[in-house]
Image (cartoon, rainbow, N blue to C red):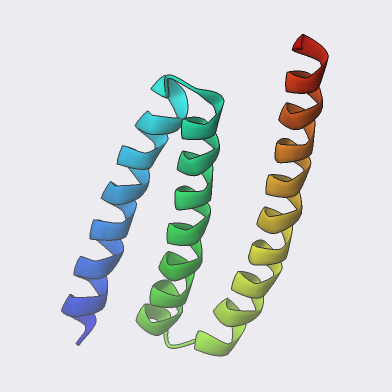
Length: 90
């Protein structure tokens, strides 16, 4: 079972790297924000998988919930910033 979780963790890390490429090279701001959202979602799942690997799921779930809230607030701040910047350009 540990092999399954380890394979899942490696696959998620690889997918996060591919999403990072979209963040760095995205043609538009919305592509970059989508890439950030994908990385955040994959990080949440990766933390839970790491919790199963270490046998301390309850601690990792607490960390995951905290990270999710921080990620949500950060995304909202970025969207608000880009929304204001777009309205200034008009």
